[in-house]
Length: 273
Image (cartoon, rainbow, N blue to C red):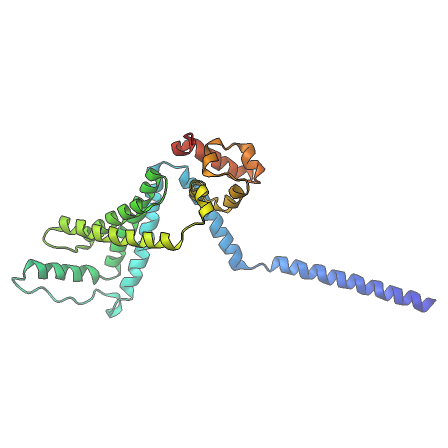
C-alpha cells in the first residue's frame, strides 16, 4: 500500500515537472521572436501610416514629399554608381573635343561628359530624374484617380527632359534635345508599363473591385481587400458605404474612418454609380 502511494506521488511530481518545462519552452518561444520579421512589420506599419497621412494631404504636399523621397533615393543610387566607376569614383577621362568639331561631334562629347561624371555629378543627375518622376507620378495619380500608362508616360517625359537639361547632354539646341530625350523616356516607360500590365492581369472577378483596390492601396489598407470581396462590396457600392456596412465585414474602427473620409472627399467615389 505504501509503495503504491509513493509511486503515485512520483508520477504527480513528474507530471508537474513536465508541465513547467512546456510552459517555459512556450515562454522562450514567445521571447525569441524573429527580429527580422518584427522589423519588417514595423516598416510596413510605418509605410501604411505614411500613405494614410499623405492621402489626406493636399496634392502639393503629397507631391513635395514624393519628390523629396524620390530625389534622395536617386541621389543614393547615382552616388553609388559614380563611386563604382573606374579611377576610384573620379570622373572618367574624356578627351577634349577637337578644334573646329562639327555640332554632332560636340553633342557626342557632351553626352560622354554627362555619363562619365563622378559621384556628386551622378547623384545630382539621378536625384533630378527620380525626384521629378516621383512627383509627376503623384500629381497624375491624384488627377486621374488611378495609376495608368498615360500618367506613367507623362512622368517619364518630365524626368527625361529634366535629366537632359541638368546633365548637360545634348546638341547646340538643349531644349530640342530635352524634348527628344523626354519622348524617348516616355516611350520606353509606356512600353514597360504595358508589358507589366500584360503579365499581371487581374482575375476577371477582380475587375469589379478595381476602384476599391486602388482606394485601399492609397490608404495603406490593402490588407482589407479580402474583406471587401467577402462582403461583395464592389465598386458599384462604394458611394453607398456606411460604417455599419464596413463593420459587418470585420473592418476595425480606425480603417473604417479612413475609408469613409476618403470616399467623402473624393468626388469620383461620391458620385452616384
